[in-house]
Length: 117
Image: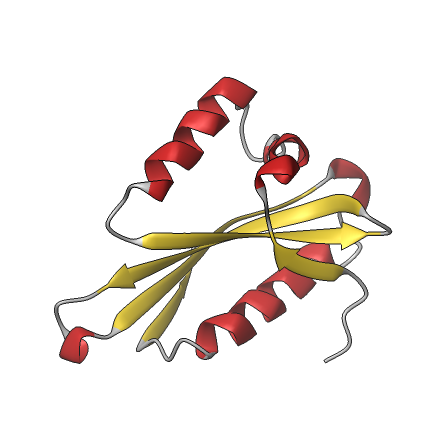
């Protein structure tokens, strides 16, 4: 599949721009967001945060949570959530490309299900 946007795993330097995208979903301060990231890093489950960039500018973000299951032979379930784009990129396919990329990435982990939230 051809992607118009570059999609990659986020890094710590991306946090301010990710927060700018997430503000379209809710009002979150940088301090609160940093605490949320720290809590995710110590959780039993593990997660990935992805960003979509356009000419080096972060224009969208999404999170993938990998949940270890007791059922289904100890398989995993994957949750895709917090898909958000910058206001000035709404309606330009960023969310669609993020979803396609994350679903493709999720399938490489062989989950028994992928949940879109």
